[in-house]
Each structure stands twice: as structure tokens, then as C-alpha cells.
Length: 186
Image (cartoon, rainbow, N blue to C red):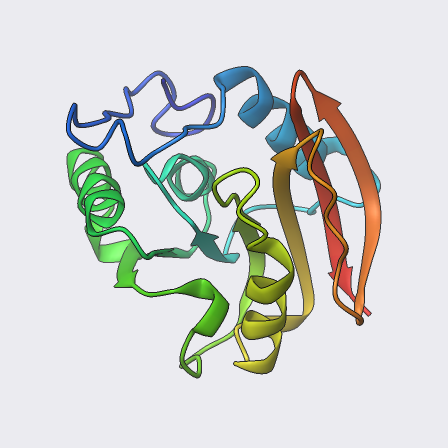
């Protein structure tokens, strides 16, 4: 896996051999498509500059690192797995992005109160874990989502995900078995 665009374009995202059993990375193709939607669609961003990004169920940290490469102001990586956080921290350090990154080992479905809110959120939990609805509720109730936050979720096409009240789908795409939805908090 590699960074697709920006100042770190082409840099490799490493996955520790021991972490491979805990992490399901999003394909480069799907990640590129997601960032194209964020960059070029009517629902996307004007710019990544100064965006505060939250990468939940971060795995390798690919979404957050891609956002940093494209100019995001900062990224907070959250995962319940210590192996995932160690992998994301390792990749951020290799790219010289530790000053722009924070790392939290936490259960996103029962996350503590936020110290700040985030304008762009990536939510890519393990497939079929039924984690998206409780994570969205927890993030919203904990103050993690800015009023105008754009939320990107990914799940398996065969997984039925019912969004909690207060979230609206503004775009939806399918890439192989992955479904990507862009959400706004209503």
C-alpha cells in the first residue's frame, strides 16, 4: 500500500507481519476513489488544508496519513487494538508526521469526551462487527464531531448498516465488496 497523492505520494504504508491478523486495510483503489470523492464531488471539501481529521478504527493509519499528505492540519488516530495504534504511529513517524498526529487506544463505541471536534472523520471498522451505529452515536454524544463534519464510513456490501438518528447519507458508492458512504450529522 502506498500514499496516493500529496507531499508523501508514493511513500509505502507498512503493515507489521504480527498486525496483519488484526488489520484489514482498505484497498488502494477504494482509498483513491474515496479521496477523489472528497476532492471532486459536490459534497466534498474545498481543501484538505487545516482540516482536523479523525481516523477511527485506524488500522495502518492509511486514511489519516493520506489526509496529512494532502495538507490536513492534524489527525487523531483511534483504535481499540494496540497493534493498530503501534502500526499507525510507526507509519506516521516514517513520514515525519508525528507532530501533526495524536494516537488513542480506545473503544470507539464507548469513547470518552473529546478535547476538540473534527471536521473530517473516517470510520472503517472490521466488517460485520455492527460497530458503525454505536461508534457514530458515541462520537456525536462525546463532542468529537464538528457541526459541519463530513463523515466517511466503509462497510461490506452484504452488511446492513442502519444509521442512528441524526445522520444523513449524502453520497454512496460501491467498490467491489466495499460500500462507502459520506454522511453529515443532521
